[in-house]
Image 1 (tube, rainbow, N blue to C red):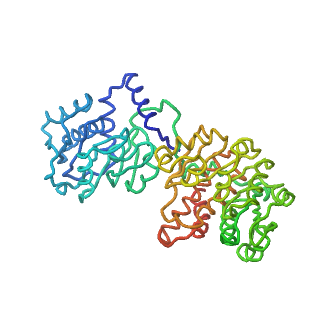
Image 2: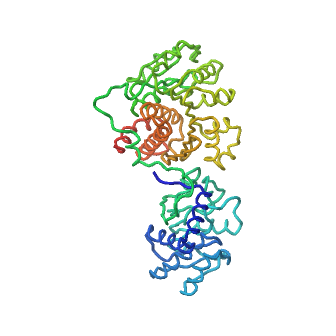
Image 3: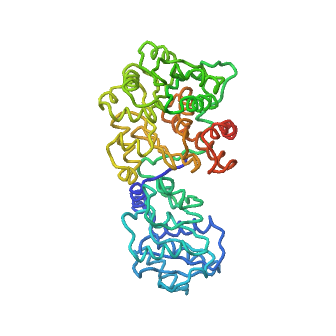
Length: 494
């Protein structure tokens, strides 16, 4: 796992490191050397600098280029400097590095590479007009673009922007920030790498889960074991109106491929025969229904969940009085892991909050932004501005695990935060959430640490989606393609 630091945590950690005797100018040179060593440089290089410490990294980098005899120009937007940045600016002046003040007639196409040192991770709000003009010019150039620490204009904590530099590589400094992964980040940085400059997190960081963490998380299966060791799961979803057979097949196959011992598909009785033709290994559990819509039956529900470790509820089940009664009963009586998604989240947003707080279940909620907006009453914009903060707040208040879907996924119990950047644009298709629920239900049935199990399941589904996108194209892939690549993903983790 890699550390991911909030902007405030990074600021405090940086200040503490300086207070303990490491000069800011030393950290600036370490950052510059990290950028220099992680990129293959070809001159001429244009280093575009703003007026903060991010510009100082650029001046220190220009000094290195001069010593290494790499042709470079410093391009400054405003002749304004922090004290540490001024130290390296003066050094560049004394060495004779060419310095240009930005003007609208400057042709950036003369540079093979451009280094973006305009704004750092502390940027928020709206870009000044002069900075916006420079960023647009950088993006319009034909140069290979390197962003120092983070792409100028991109939010360090949320990965949101109106306009930002689009980089070929972003070299983060000291530690990754949430803005390197969340929301728009994947669309504006082709590659990212972190440069450790000796700053230790002062507060607990968030954790980015990686492929190398999967083997320990999933464990090794003993030969002396049976299906009960890997958990019985129940999937309750689908309806005549919402392609019940296909959705349940997605979930059932995803759960089986992800290692569940036994999967029980709770299906409206009238859909039984249709579902049966789409699944082989799962057990089908007919539920009373009315024209393809499940009707709550307490005895049947208790029979369904009596021996299962994980229940996933809500995918395509419909929002009715009967499905609300079913969910309320699970919250009140089921003491295993309960994953709630899709229609289940809509139902949850309508019931009394105390029924959620007082549940016997180990609750796992998997909303996308719109569903989370319904749960919290916040606007989508408010959530996008602080996705980790809002996810933590909700998870802590309701003592649940929250998996907030997005280009990168946030998983938190209100204290610890995991991020997985697995996934691709091709997963923005009907049924992908059902596949995720199937994977989660399986992994949660045999990985005891529920928080770790949740982020592990999200990572598996995301990597399988990526493989499907690479083989089939992100335009043409469908949710069942993600399921088909789960075995290959698990092989790669072993």
